[in-house]
Image 1: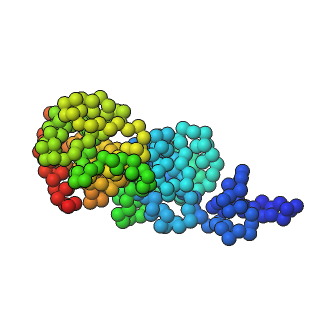
Image 2: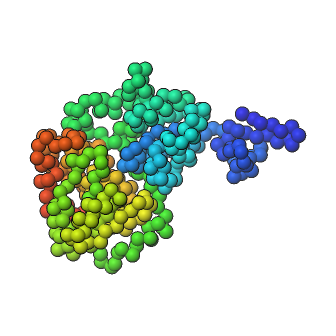
Image 3: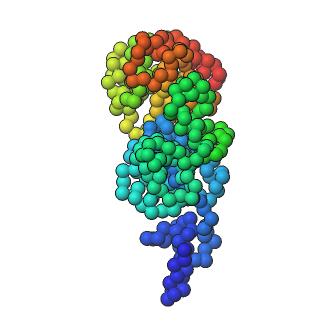
Length: 369
């Protein structure tokens, strides 16, 4: 669209990638302009939660930029997701699903919609968005979860078929979301950008010769059966101290009580974070993170350190480790189950003993020497 001021003899090009409207763009916003970019693609990603899922969904961003060099990426997410995605440089605009700005998205026209969330608010918006091509999850005519395209059928069936999800599936989450948009995953990694200043903030943790093991015992609220017994964490700390590792306990506000109990019995230092950047800066300064299937695991993977993660009721198959992740599980017939209450004896994690974890830590350390 052209806006022509006949008196000033100026032509404004509102179809340009850099056009703002209420103020000049960074190049002056007057035409002709060598930076005029009308051929960019407008792409909307919808992913509201959870935080770990949001973080691993960033793996698709570099591929979008490769396929569509000139593109503008808008991401619709949760309030918590906004705070996380602010450190991802490939996103042009982040919108909260609870903000009035969501209505503005419905007035825009996008080239592509990538709808990766099954939340009903997310799929309702996905259905209403104007996009030339829509991929992923939507709200169907019966008011139920549906899909826009054939390529999303596998991800859809995974939620309906326990046999497929628990026993047969061999695709990671990254492979699945790439499949949903018709691409093959080629190893694209998490997108997470920490400055040298960010990393330096916790550089004091390391003294010469230190091998630092961070322990994050949290497991979130969604799957309470992901917990590992406190006694196991305590025994793990003692075994690591015997081998002269520097052990640091970490978590967020949700883990405060658990960390308090753990440090009372082990006398290890505790770091509690309420900021994603600070947590990531801390993680970037340790050698190995030991955790459960949690956001901490994804943050450690995004920070490119070695991770040892314990799996019980949730699937380890869907987690892409990029060669940095050691997955520990009992591989019982009843696991994974995704149950909120265990119908057996919680053997999947209770009997995943600390000695096994230490053995894997030793392997990681020797591998990186």
